[in-house]
Length: 403
Image (cartoon, rainbow, N blue to C red; front, top):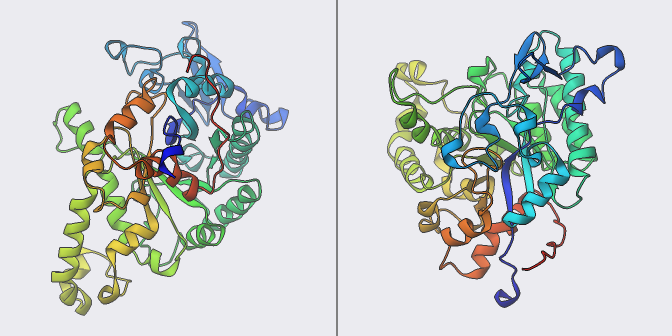
């Protein structure tokens, strides 16, 4: 089997789209176009998204494709200075072909990674109208522009889990297999996944029943990592990716995987080399501390909300293997830790068009990172695991002239 595996293409499960200006104005009633997210240009020629009293420019770090590292800047950038692949689906496919990217899952930009823009809106009823318009655009226009090249990622109304479950059902009927969720809802002012009143249960039940993956991007809590109040930015940025480990541990000890055996989560832009340590540490804590934690003490009233999972029968390794998926941009430590990290649970990302992207050398970087692995394992990480997790059938790889 290995001899005929095509290792020249990968599937990226974490890219980004800078929404084109027509997303909402084409989909809401004409009377609502001025209050839906729309584009305006100031006297200096700078584009701004305008919605709910906010004016939001695009960060230059979100659209670095075509620039040298020395040119990267967080300063606002107009669409006229972006590579068309940032916002145009057909142009994106051309860029994907150049980098060996067979298919791509794209997180949103102006809405933020899990739709916080609509959750924060004053008029949530209209916010839901706009959220549905985004989902329809993602499925019916962005993904439909190149069948088999895009995995549709949809948003949910974070403020109403029952409504969210219905929107998940609607989008699943249109072919969506994943939705954006927050790595930590608490900083957004929402209950955590441990809420004793079960705030998120309708969402988790729908994800289980519909087999929709909960995709969580670093930063979907609307917080910036901070080691200390005056830590250098570069230190915070380096450290911040491991916030993903907190999401992993929170889910592992939540009891959700026991209640929802088909629930799966995918953690984006956090790399994976840290996973073996945190799994090992979690097992040590479970072994040594579970007995007094089960008994409950006054300390537990201050340390946490208590445990809702059967600690004596909790199998952290099995739950990780059955429910949690990680992705890497360029992480040699994760590849060196395969075995501790199941090879079926690791996927690729390219972060196009953000400043961490490996484009236009994505397939070369990925292959170099996993050089020496059996071809079957490389194929899984490059694309096979993503196809299985997202129940996605990609298009046949294009024939590239001169290749």
